[in-house]
Length: 179
Image (tube, helix red, strand yellow):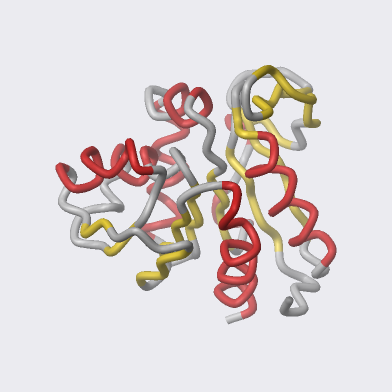
């Protein structure tokens, strides 16, 4: 993996994130030297994961979304899980946060159901993406070009399908952030 010392990465999530899709990128990016903040709406000090078929572990929230400055981060990671992005896509501040990264040309990496936030923020239109299969129709209807690949990189957008794709997803994020 690339050396990411001095880089700052945001992970936007809330209760119901897929455990591995937050924790594995978080660990890999930290191991590569990046500073990684978990950002969540509200004022909770932790958010709870979904681990395949049931509730999982809690993860510490580093910064409340209301206090997060997108300009201070080099990239954004959007974990999936069905619950997490579905909750976030109706939070106007979360959608605006995602859009700010996209508009600035900073890497935005979404996995599994995470690309729902690319739809909501308008970032999917005209872009090549992948996702969990059930999100395909939403992406296509939003004007995206969906493909079934472990990782798809289109400019600053990085997307993957599922937990099995996390190693390729992590590598693509690190390459994009290292620049």
